[in-house]
Image (cartoon, rainbow, N blue to C red; front, side, top):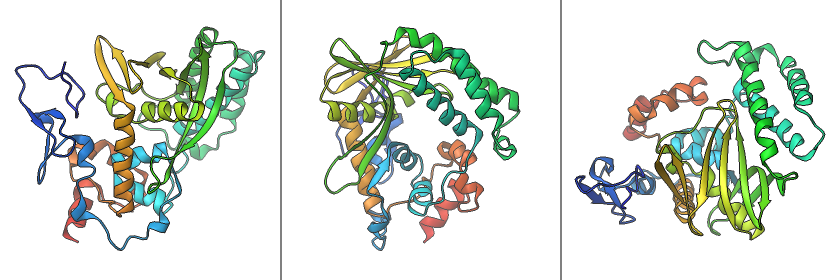
Length: 332
C-alpha cells in the first residue's frame, strides 16, 4: 500500500501522484504544494531560504523549546516569534486552567491509591469555585460556566473508569523530558502524563480534556512521535503503545508499535501512521528555519482561518491576520 506523505491516506491506482523535490516521497497530485517547486507538507517548511532574516539575533532563541511551541511554529511561525521570541505569552483561559487543574488531580490519583473519585470531585470543585470571574470571560461561543464545570466532572468520571484498567502503580508520572536532536539546534522539552510498565515494555497515557483529534491530524501531529522518541531515549525501554485519552468525550486514540520506528492508529478501519524519524526530521526543519530567522506568516488564508480566529497575537493587535500580514511581509 502506498501512502501520501502529505495527507497520510492511501494512494489508489486511479489517483495521480508526484514526487516531493526534497524527500522524494510520493504524494497525491492534489496534495502537492506547488510554489517555486513541488513539495509535501513537511518539506515545504524547509523551503523558505529567500524569506529568511540574516539580521535575526540567534541569541534570542531559547536553549530549550517545548513541544507545544514547536507545534505553534508549524501552525504559524509569526505567532511563534511573538509568543516565544518576544514573550507575548498566551493569556490565562478557562480551558487551559481546567486542563492544568485536572491533570494535577489525575497525577495525584495515579500515585495515591486511596484517593477516591469523591475526593477528586471535592478538590476540583474547590479549585473551580476559586477561579476569578475574569477567567470565565474567555468562554467561547454559547457555553456557560456550568458547561465549563461539567467539562471537568465528565473528565473525572471517565478517568476513574479508566484507572482500574491500568497497572496498580505507574512506572512514572508527570515526567519532564529534555532531549537533543542535533548539536546545532535547541533541545526539545516534552512532559508525559503517565508511563506504565507492562510485560517489560512501556505504555504511555496522555490525558486530554479538550476536543478529540480526528482525520489526517492524527498522522501530522507531532506530540505522539516526539513523546515516544523522548521516552525511548530516556529509559532505553521499548514503547509498545501511546494512548490519547479524551476524557470529556470518553474516546481514545491509540498508536501501537509496528516496528522500532513506525506506529499506527486505527479509527473506524482507517489507519493513520506516524514515524519517529520523520517527526525528528520535521523538528530539525523547524529549528533550522528558526535559526535563520524565518518567522513569516503562512499566506494561505483559508488554512489559517481557524488559527487566526483563536490567536491571542491577533487579539493583542500584534498581527492583522494571515491574509493582510503575509501581504505586508511579502512587500517588505
